[in-house]
Length: 163
Ligand SMILES: NC(=O)c1ccc[n+]([C@@H]2O[C@H](COP(=O)([O-])OP(=O)(O)OC[C@H]3O[C@@H](n4cnc5c(N)ncnc54)[C@H](OP(=O)(O)O)[C@@H]3O)[C@@H](O)[C@H]2O)c1
Image 1 (cartoon, rainbow, N blue to C red):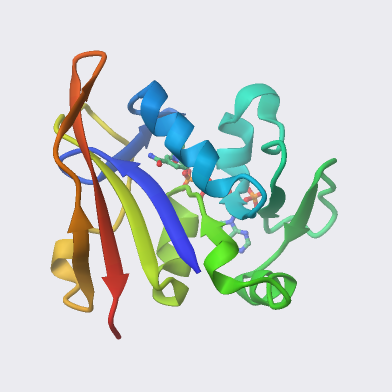
Image 2 (cartoon, protein in one colour):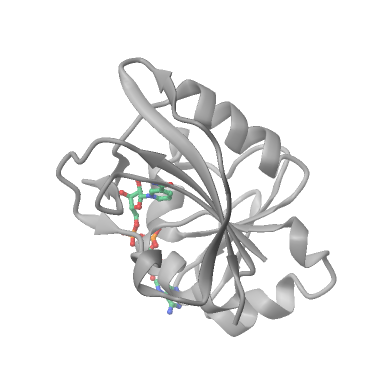
């Protein structure tokens, strides 16, 4: 299982149920990596997507505690265990945890690879990703050079979970 996230300098990921950054090239990269694959997200993240709708051309799984929730174009799961069962027939490298804060925290131990876009800025945030520098099992496998987009400097960092 993979996770994919865009973080600020201090691991902020969002504010007021929106992303902190809009980096078109990063969104293209996200689309290229996840198209045709499984994306797992929390209900708040679904609501934050355009039109509050699942992402096209992907198998969408949405976490909610509401057992009666139905979402057109997505499978609703009520627990981590439900998700693990739901994706058990898929290649684990084809499964992407795509946020937000609650869902990253719950699935971090199940992920082998973390694809992190690190933006060199620190706007105010109200949701955060766990600081991987404090988790020694997570090691950096590769990092890109810094790139610039619309005045923001960012890089791709791939971490692997060696636990
Ligand atoms: N920077 C990035 O890459 C990135 C990526 C994704 C999201 N984000 C940001 O993250 C923020 C959203 O994060 P968030 O933490 O507020 O919300 P979230 O993780 O997207 O969703 C939280 C919801 O998931 C459900 N949930 C949580 N724990 C659960 C459990 N144990 N079992 C079943 N369902 C559970 C609940 O839905 P119900 O209320 O329906 O029960 C809960 O309200 C937004 O600002 C968004 O823009 C950033």
